[in-house]
Image (cartoon, rainbow, N blue to C red; front, side, top):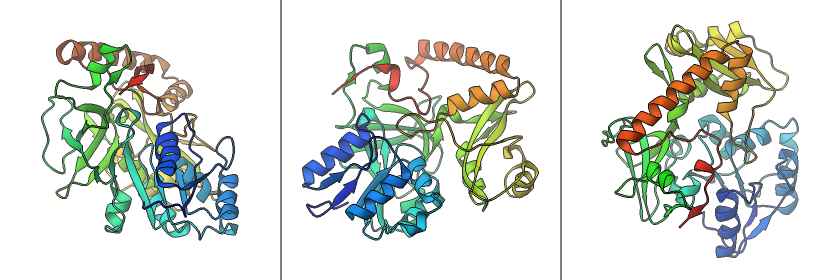
Length: 363
């Protein structure tokens, strides 16, 4: 990012989060840069107003923050030409959002960082100056002194380049252990010190990593795997959709059915039938959402991550399928216990949980 004493970072990320504290506070401190705090908690209008007033050269955020900023009715009224760089991270970023940030917010040198609190927090980062496709559709390459491998979640074997599997990281930035929680530590860090993230991803021949979602978020419909991210990326191409999240809801016949929660662009309209017709013939038939829910927002953690676990609970209740969800959760727990007995690993945390097992980290 090439921070200097001339840079001014607008940092709306909470300081209790590794992103805001390490990449924000410490990042500015080590480079002599100025950090500007727009408001006590994230407010898209105040954030852009601060960027304009303080002539900030960098802006941080998770995807939901950038989406909220881009969707402001008066977005075009803000002068953001001072922006040069920034970081988008925290969760999987929609490709279209990244493109808009680069073009509409003038952040040509924005970078995506991938990692977790347990990895301090970055394992990979996109390289400024590489092709636009690499910058917007991948989470970059491993940082110095860090290793990444993609493994089969069931066998632990390394998969071929381009094949999806669980992302594992190893290196100096990986935590030593969870404080006073050896079982929790052993469930995510194996004997060779590989951190098993619970994230799904692929790595291409050039070493670029793409994060495709969470293992627990994968939808299994009638034996077919459905990637929520792939369905979301397609739906983002509809002009009326501002934001979309795809989840699996329990089903007696197929095990799970696909459901989409849709937030429309302000002033636009769309119906369930219109969106189904939009999907027909464009994506595989079993990936087309059976259920649709139009919303004005999504449940999030205080750090801005989407809580899909809460979405699944709400959906099951509204569809009268709470008993199926409970049954599925019980089966998942049983499977996890069985897996733990044989592999020493516990179930992966859900997307949006702030840290694994609630334990403090020790490095």
